[in-house]
Every structure is written in structure tokens, then in C-alpha cells.
Image 1 (cartoon, helix red, strand yellow):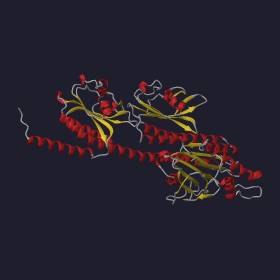
Image 2: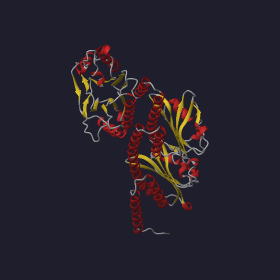
Image 3: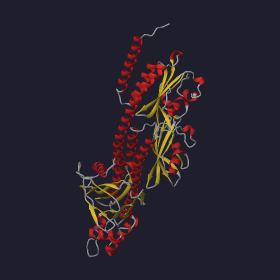
Image 4: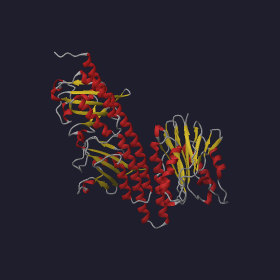
Length: 589
């Protein structure tokens, strides 16, 4: 009989503490997730003397585990595989958030032999512990098969629980760092894509750059940008990479075939975790296991779709789809712009050129009013005989806020409309990453400096509103001051801001703030105040204020039409010399 002394117990405790200290240093030595996973596998294998190690993390919805690591030859094959809470040992541990030791897998119903065998080994014994960070489950660590047929002990379980705390903290930190780096890279690459779209690159060059930038954020083994041809009712690849030679015909199919066609028909993105289980997948690659598709939309009209394929099961997540949709938006702008340029080249008469420019202008103007909680917003553009760069828009930003803007480009015709199209793309690209109007304006100024000629510039009134609290931040960049009018007709103008956008870097922009209660907020372009009658007299700010006072209780859309009616009655036979644009914001109590 072996006698265990106090000294033996102390030596074992010291050995365990030394191991945990060493393991902690190793786990904290890197924030690179891939390197960390390899370190975890090495530490756990050595600590427990096991045949295999796997680690899964909780997905975005908190309903499944997703494999991040599985030692052995099948690591890549099972990465991304989803395990519902409650299924198998890992699923049981996630559901109950308790550790579990199974030393005889053949006698425990919680063991899913099908699931465990996907790791490429036959499980005999399993030890699994929940990984928690700050009290929240982030994943499950699993050790499989102690070597030489030994069983897991209470000491093994105690060590694994303690080690799991270190692993959870390290994985949590690495994932936070990974997300922060991804967001930073997303912002930079989306801004670059916006600059490419607004530059003087050919369509093929723009699409190639968009695809190259996307690969830096979302790995894929094959990709295709499809364009919808409604006349022939076919979907055709405009650009594709990673497909075997001779697959061109398989990338040209009817508009009711394939996952791409489903995304186009439903006008929403789709993720297919395993294409072998999908009846919609058009088999263009034998090795493809998962697919992600985002439609390319232009004012609600589908132009095509962006398609990514991976040889890994469950390769794509919701944040990948959101990013793909952002890049698809840029691709749609590039295709739209290319189509407009081609149409312009074919038209010789000036009236045709103006018609093309009007098409571009309509493309980036919202067609309807919008209601967000108590918030009501509407805009309207009234074109002149010539096409200017007037623009209005409203769109969501972070945390439920809504951004809105009215802007005007120096110049007229197609060049001005295209600059404004790029300006719109910049605002929409930056929206998920900013919270205030000043941040939007500064980002827009940076992109304009990279994409427009020295003599081109944009005046803009940009604002962000919280529909719940009514708090508004705004920035007036060389534009007409907006009018904030109370129901009794008293008003003030909103001047805070700075110089125009697109002329200089580092411009001093001041942000204004106020709380919108029962007032009416009016944004407009100078086409209204600078309208002239037959005597050459300007309509002016005073007449606009008076017209607003007469109609201040109207809903936003009728108010826009009432204001334009007043301006139109003023210029009469003299005609409209410039575009006129209004945007009205109201908030109900």
C-alpha cells in the first residue's frame, strides 16, 4: 500500500500551481486566435494526456455551439460545424453549464456517437467543461480518450475546470481583439471600396478590387458576381474566381435556379451551412460545402448578386453576411455607374445626357417618407430643366438612430450626379461605424478629397436623430441653415458646422445639438431661396419662413409639396432655374 504524505500532497499542489502559472503565461502570450487555439490544444493534451481535444464557441444567437478547434486530420472538415444545445456531450454541457465526465461512452445516453465520430476518432472516455467569461458561457472545452485506456479522475476534472477559466479569458480576449481588428479593417476597406467606385477605374477594375478587399475580411475558395438580365430571364457571372476551367456555362443559369436566384427573388442575403443538404445549390464546384449570397440592390431593384463559396462546412456567419451586403452595395453602385456611362456614351444629344443624370439622381433619392417610432420624415426633389447635384436621404445608423441629410454638388449634369452618388455611398458605408453627424461629415470629407477634382466640392447639412429621446446632432458644412420652427411660428436657424466638403483636409467642423420635441425641422437647397421671378427678384429666406409658418402643422410629405407650390407660384413664367429639394422632420409626443 502506497502511503501519501503531507509532503507528497504539497508537492502535487505546487506542481499543479506551477503548471497553471505556465499555462496562463502561454495563453496570455498572444491575441492571435489561430495561434491561441494551437496553444490550447497543446496545453490540454499535455495536462490530461489525451488523444484529442476540441473547442467550440457559442454562436451569435446563443442557440448553438460552433466548432473552432478539433485536433487531428479532420480539423478543417469540422470547423464551423454547429451543435445545438443539448446534443451530445458538448451540447449537454452548454445547456446545463456544468462539467461532465464520461468514462464509458457506451453506457451514457448523453454521448452522440455520430457527432463524436465526426472528429475522426472513436470516443471511449470524454471530459468536457463549460468555458465562462464574466459569468457568461462562451464555449465548451472537450478532452477525448485518456491514453492507455485510463479513466478521467476527479483531479483531472478539477484541473480542467481551473484551466478552463484561463482558457475562457484568453479566448474571450482574443475574440474581442479579433472583432476590433476586423471592424477597423472593415471600415478601411469599405472606405477604399467607396473611393474605388467614385474613382476613374473601369468596372472590371472596381469589381476586382472589391473582391480582393473582401477576401481580406471573409475567406472564400470561390466567388462570383452575378448580374441579372431581366430581358433574357437569366443570371450571368460578370466576374468569377476559384471555379474550375470550363464552368462558365454553369455560372449562367435561369433566374429561377440556384441559391443566387432565391436571394435575388427574395431580395435578402442567404447563408447555406452545408450545400449538400440544399436542393437549391447549383453544383459548380465539387468541393464546395457552404455558400453565402447577398443581392445587389439599387433603389429596391435587384441588379444581381454577390456569391461566396467555401470548402468548409458552416464557414459563414451573420456578421460575414452583413459585410458581404455592404460590398454588394458598392458593386451595385459600380455596375449602375458603368451602365450609366455606357448609356451616356451611346447618346449624343444633350437632352439624353440630362436624362441619364436624372436617372442617377433618382437612384440615390429615397422614394417614400419614413416613420421610426414617433419620428416622421419625408423629402422631395423637384428637378429643373438642367440636372444639378441636389441630394437628400435618410437611413439608419448605430443604436437605432436615423441619419438624414440634404446636400448640393458644385456643378451640374452627369459629373455632379456621379459625385453625389459617391457621396451617398460614403454616408451609407460610414453609417454603421459612427454615432454623430460630425463623424459622418468628417468621413465624407476624407473620401471626397480622394475621389473628386480639386474644383469640385459639396455643401451638406448632415444630422443624426435618436427617435426615442428626440436628441439631434447636426453639422452644417457650408450649406443653407436648416429652419427649426415651433407650432406657434417662432423659429431659429441651425448654423453650427464649418466649411464645404471636398476642398481641404482637417477642416474645423463644429457639431450642434438640440432636442426635437414638437417643432418642425426643415432642410432645403438654395434652388428654393435663389429662385427668381420675371422681375429678377429672389424668393429669399423670408418668403420661405413665411410659407413654412403657414403650413407648419402639415405632415412632412404634404409640407414639402406645399413649400414647392409656394416657390413655383413665385417664379411663375420665369421658370425654374435650379433643382429644389426639401426634407422635413417631425416628432410626435
